[in-house]
Length: 177
Image (cartoon, rainbow, N blue to C red; front, side, top):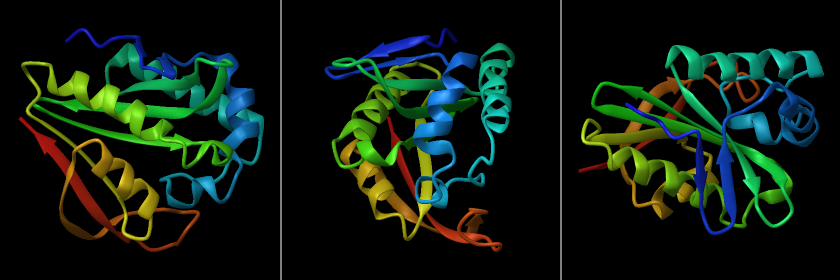
């Protein structure tokens, strides 16, 4: 499958990450406990931790384990966050993060729609899904805005180490063709 290195939407450009993105990611959101509350990793304590994360992102394109993109606002070239797609046979799942200062502007929905639409346009992919903590109403709303339907609650499904030392319940959303 030929996964695009970039996407263009009305307001956004999604592109492959580079190591130089680490500083902005660290400053804008990787160390922010509010942003990372519902992520599967703890807030970064140093720029080196973010650089290590960026190396993983870059390497995942090489080994095909995941396809992360940096979300850039076209109007001013600002880095807003990231979105990542993982393909497993006929199923794809995705996740995203956005710096807090850019929340509630529709950027995550816009980026997600581009990635979900591309995935469902591939003949090999029949299902795109994602999960979010049941308390993360913003993320649930993003998935609903891109046409995904809530399938149910996955009990004790996801670890959010910045949120709790125990697994949390998660909503499961999907869209199929």
